[in-house]
Image (cartoon, helix red, strand yellow):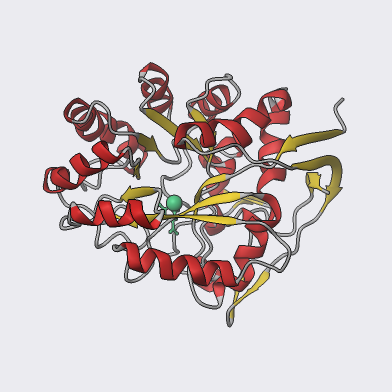
Length: 347
Ligand code: DOR
Ligand code: ZN
C-alpha cells in the first residue's frame, strides 16, 4: 500500500474566495496547497471589468501569508452586456478567463446570462484572443428536473454554442454526470472539464444520510447537486483515465455556517482546507493514485497554456481530523466532513 506520494505543486482551476474578512480564512488554506487558482468572479456585485479584477487580485494577494507563493488567476463574469472591448483590456491586465453563469443557476448568478446569443460579440473576441470560457453548465428552466440540468444544458446550450464557436476554449466546470464525461471525451482539444473532490467522493445519498440514519445535511448541498452513484463512477473513471482533458477544480465555495444550516440553505461545499487530501482519498479509492499528479498538476496548466509549477507537495497516509469550524469574519465556516477523520494528510 502506498504510504507517501510526492506531487508537483498542484493548481486549483475553479475556486471561490469571496472578499473582505473571508479572505483571511480561505486564502491561506488554498495557498498552502496550490501554486495558482482560478478565482471565480461571482462577488456581489460581480467582477465585470479588468480594473475590478485587478483590484480584487490585490486584495487576495494581501491575504497570502508572508513567504508563501500563490498566484490568483483572475476571471470576468459574463453578463448580457459585457462589452467585447473589455476582453482586450482583460487580456492586457492578465485576466485568464471569463465565467458564464446562466442567470439564476446558482449563488450570486442573478447578473448572469439570460440568452447566450446576446454575448456572441464578446465570445467572438474571446475566441480570437484565445481566452477560455468557463461554463456553469446547467439550464435553469423550471420544468427541468434539478438532477437533469447538466445533461439538458449540454444538449440545448453547449452543442449549439460549440457549433458556432469551434475554436473557443471551453471548460465545462464541476462536471457531475456521465453525459458530461462522454461529451468531453468525444470533444476536441478546445474542450476541457474540471472535477471537484466532493463529486468524486459522494453521491446524492450523502445529502440525506445523517450520523444515525436519515438526516438532511446542508453542508453536502452544492450546485450542480450531487448525483447518482453511476454518475460518480463515471467521474472517477474520467479523472483517473489519463485523459488530459480532465483536471482539478475544487469549487470550494465558503458560506457562513448559519446560512447553510437554514430553511433555504446556500449552495456550496467548503473543501479548500483539505483539498488535496480529499482528492487523494478519491483516487486511492479506485487504486489510481498514480494518476493524481497529471490531473492535479499538469492537465490544467497545459490546457490554459501556462507553465507547470515547479516545487512539490507531499501527502501521507495518516489519519487526522481537521477542525470542526473556522472563524469566517464574524461567523463560522464549517468545512465538508467537519470534524471527521480523513485518511490522507498533506505534510
Ligand atoms: O455550490 C455552488 N456554490 N455552486 C456554484 O456554482 C456557486 C458556488 C458559490 O459561489 O457558492
Ligand atoms: Zn463554482
